[in-house]
Image (cartoon, rainbow, N blue to C red):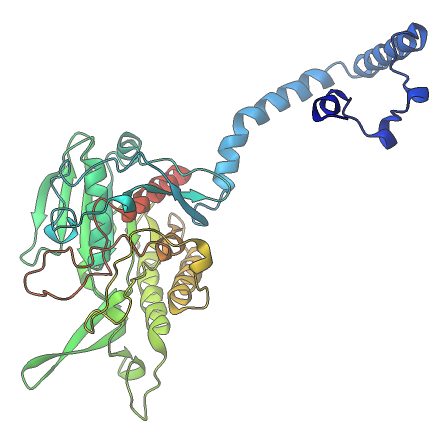
Length: 420
């Protein structure tokens, strides 16, 4: 029998429908049984819905409602943070020429980077699609509000991406700049939206030890006191995106009251080295406690942006490490036992803890970027960051603009829509 002949055969299961020639009851040469079956079916339907005349209408309406709300509900249930990078040749919403606020250190193309393939990928959650950033929708949600990014230079990198995306709709006004260009305020007058960068190294109060009149790179962190640089503004904020990590990868001593309770990268007999993840946990716990106990912080929404990994290969930042890759990893490359995932898991635990202890009017959520960014060794400035004082060193911590970091704001908008 030819393939064409096979395709003409009826598609049925003989065990279920008795497709043998002798038993083929659906045969128009035998009209009486067929007519009886048809009449019986019609009569059954008539009796069923006559006894309950609303049943058909209700079920029909329910089905229609399900059709209307299913995509929205499925999207709400979708884990935005679990997925893969897939090819996307639409490119970025902005370019390094169309965004005037890109700092020199993140303007990789202007600093000599030639390949552009790293822009041709989009983040695809497993069970839904992540919409591209919509500046109009974002500005409508935050109209009349104040949003602050609390963190270090990677938090600043995040806000720089957001500025580029929003400037395609409304150009922000520079409202404040401190002497070190760390604390910044931008205002979007059309939407009465204020965007702040509140710089902090450790979230809690930290002091660098001075040895022989010189900075030592050793820090004392006081877990009983948060950094006032961000805490003093807390009552004026509607939204907070809080993050921190990279400053903890150095020698630090954790104080509670007058006691040193732990350290990181120390080697002292009377002090326990508890590691980076523990120090970070204590800092985030102190920060979330500050937010929860802020009596003037009515209706504040706090989002934790999880750890953004670096991708140094063949050394660290100061030992010749580089990041020269030009395409993403897939999820098979992720080591879920590595320190990056340990830090991310700790952060998620702490935001969940804060939510459980949350006071009325306080909301907590997560912006979980770790999995997505573990796969993007190709998105860092590397050698193309234009730092004349640190020639020969590569930046494998921050992210090119435009670049993979823009997905953080796709995710931010998606999370805000769920909260709205």
